[in-house]
Image (cartoon, rainbow, N blue to C red):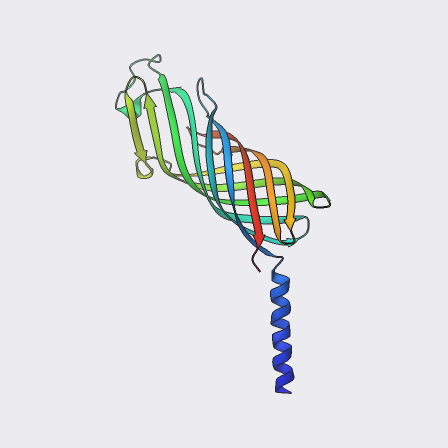
Length: 207
């Protein structure tokens, strides 16, 4: 009787482990972005990013991702040189300042797979990401360059939302490649970035 109970318990644990193999995935992503700041005469400039992905995938047509992402964004706008210690004297004192921002973010993304054919599927994504600003570099021809650390900024924590449409390819029984462009917006900030981002993400089942 005890042997049967042990065998049954081992069988149930094994069955649960096998079933869990299709639920939890891990992997990584690389990103390229074109970003611009909200402001006067803004420029759209290239940036990059990447990170670690943790995916919970229980249902066939949608799944969730969390993780940790690094992002590097750049844009030039016309702005007052307050941060350089130069208070403006009149409305025409704005100069071209290039802002380069580095952040670490915690994304929460939902993926929908409304259509699939063979190993290929359509992906629709929606994301909410909390970003922690590591530093902001400001540079201008008139006053040179300064670097503001996160502790020097009024708003070190910022939120970002995004939507995207892309493609998923199944490479193996538990390995997938996700490629999707997305449009992303920083929320409620004076120097808010908007970005068009292309993400390539590889995920594989771990149990």
